[in-house]
Length: 207
Image (cartoon, rainbow, N blue to C red; front, top):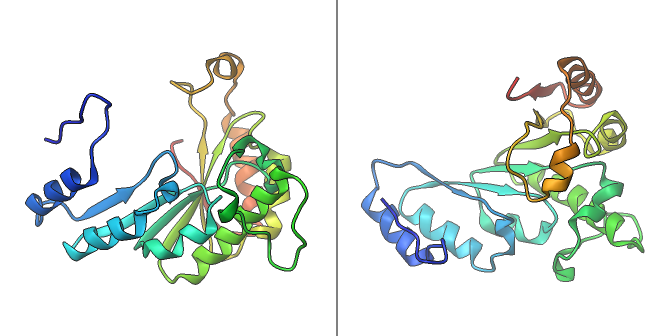
């Protein structure tokens, strides 16, 4: 078993040695986070894992589109947090990775710029030829029917989309959690019907 150091983290060489020892017993490596695309060495790490025979899955929030393709992942799971015009909740990312939506002038607000980056990531992922899914965690005030309507123009009929109902538990903002509600099955069904208008392969996970 791998044991982290006093910081709770493990260095990549230690993880790589573990993968070397477990060849034939493990089959894949998930690159997750936080946001793994913030790691400059991510493409090298993925390549080293593949050289040992491992499949590589990338979990990403899609706000760093330029960093996705170089990973060469076999499977990509990208989170869509909310309607693309409300991505102001994801501030503070490196400006060099923010890519405006094709054919649209660079937005003036950080929120719409991040939304354009997410839209760009969706197009990039579809063009890579690997298996992929888009995941949406549904919670009051975060993703609702208006958000579902707003992202329809960005959805493709080829997309596999998983809706995940928010379940109370440990979160980074306990004040938000104290007042957060959960969606009843009927409302989840409404969100499902909305998104299936554009992506028939939309399903609900965890209900």
